[in-house]
Every structure is written in C-alpha cells, then in structure tokens.
Image 1 (tube, rainbow, N blue to C red):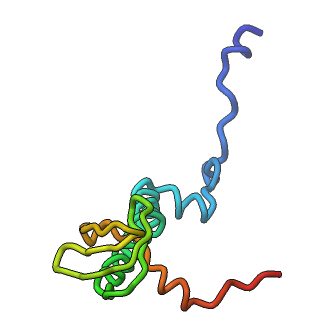
Image 2 (cartoon, rainbow, N blue to C red):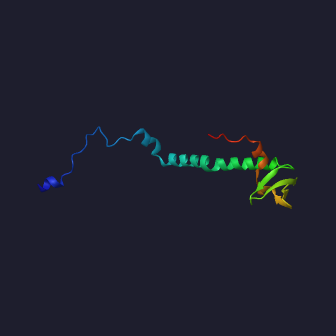
Image 3 (tube, one colour):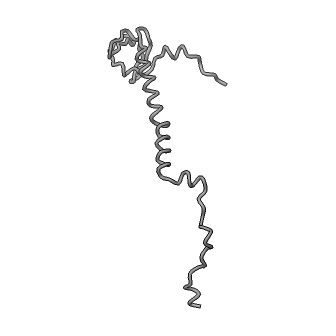
Amino acid sequence: MLADATAAPPAAPVGTSGAQPTPAQQLFGSPLILIVLMIVMMYFVMIRPQSQRAKQQAKLLESLKSGDKVVTTSGIVGVVVTVKDKTVSLRSADAKMELTKASVVESLNAAATRPPPDRP
C-alpha cells in the first residue's frame, strides 16, 4: 500500500501532448504582438485626434480676418479689429485688447454658417 501511494501517475501516451494551443492563443500569445497592438491603439486613441485638432487650430488662425467674431481661451467674445503676425486686436464691448493668436480658440462666424443640427 505504501508503495502504491508513492508511485508516479501513469504516463500519457507518447504520440499525444498536453493541451494544444488554440489559433487565438497562438496569435495573441506573443508579448511582442500585444505591445505592437497597444501602440497602434494608442496612436488612434491619443495621437491622431490631437494632431487633427492642431491642424484645425492652425487652419482657424490662418483664416482670421478683420470683422470675425471669435472666442478666446479665457472666454472673452470679441470682434477682430486687426490681425498681425503673432497677435490679434479684439474689440469687446468698450474695450480694445491685443492678444496672441494662440489664445483664439473658436470663430463664431464659422458656427453661424454651419447648418443647425437635426433634432428629433
């Protein structure tokens, strides 16, 4: 009895191996493939939208002209009086101020020409 308890379990037949990996395990089993997939996902989730926003902002700043109604980063709404290389002069109510072009975040003229969104 004691000899039976210490005996090794029966061996598997020679031609069969344990668990065969499935095709999904073979494809995603490599850590290198997972890292590449994560980098691709980060590109589409983080980097690409940021570059699209930067292109849109550059296009907005290039299209600024006198008479455009704009909004700044601080929430000031004003009308563009003059446009220089790096600055924009705005008139808001009774005040005239000069701001950097980078502080302009939205043109309200473009929003006025856009059709209103469809509502159910």
